[in-house]
Amino acid sequence: MISVNEYGLGVFEEMLDNSEELQVGISEFENGTTVIDAGVEEEGGFEAGLCVARICMADLADIRLTTFDLGKLVVPAVELSTDYPVLACMASQFAGWRVKVKKYFGMGSGPARALSLNPRELYDKIMYADEADEAVLVLESDALPDEEVTAKIAADCRVEPEDLYIVVVPTASVAGSVQISARGIETGIHKLESLDFDINTIKHGHGIIPISPVVGDDVKCMGSTNDCIIYCGRMYYAVDYGNRDGNEGLAELKEFVKSVPSLNSRDYGKPFYTTFKEAGFDFFKVDAGMFAPAEITVNELNSGKTFTSGRINPEVLLESFGVETV
Image: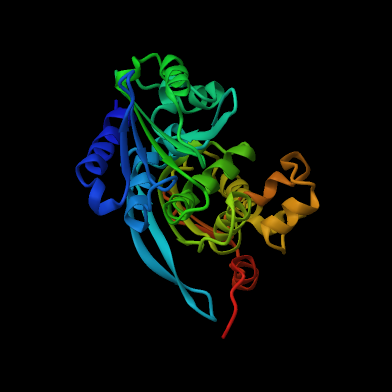
């Protein structure tokens, strides 16, 4: 059994060893918890963002920088591939833990979730739980936690505070933009799971997603970074769907593929920040179907059939970025 926390800790230690080059800060609290600042008070950057993404995916994916042609301009992008998509994305990367202690709030993702079992029903579905003695968590937040926050996280993970390792990265930062784009494969898997697709049949995943520039505060950057996946994220999955009945199973698979892309959402067609603002900044008023990749391709390994659906929409992404030609 692969331990996602053991794998994630290896990358965390790399960040400690290369903190100066990565432009990140290191703090060790009196209770023993080690915290890396990847963009709150420190600069961070592309390489720090890649490390954060690697931790989120428990270092079970190859993640590298590339470029994406939006027509008017070429922007940086991430290309990622994994042979452990469910373990890397759902057991670790999925931002399923709302960490709230008094006034502090952050979205928790990464290996430590597999110790806290947030959310438990997802771990039951993928039949995974980690038994590591050390916990590694990524917090998407514009503030660093204090000892009270880290003590609560450690207790939820059933580890001692000195065995807790946290990276904090704001949404409105270069590193934040990188690690959010690196959630493309996970976004597609989560959408499939919401459609009642058996995600345990997904054996391999690949994605190419543009990286957003920093466009403003955390809320505006939340919009533009999600738009990278929604309007230009291109995902590829290889699935073992062969235990389904022949053509009937393939027809079922085709319907799943057709239903995944973001263009199926009633809110599709404008930058997410605009949609969010029109909804009074209330997530419950935004169609959850928006949180999906622009394009999905699925190869069924047994039949050799490949299905694709969706399309990229660079125009909306350029609007989201606020690009001006001068």
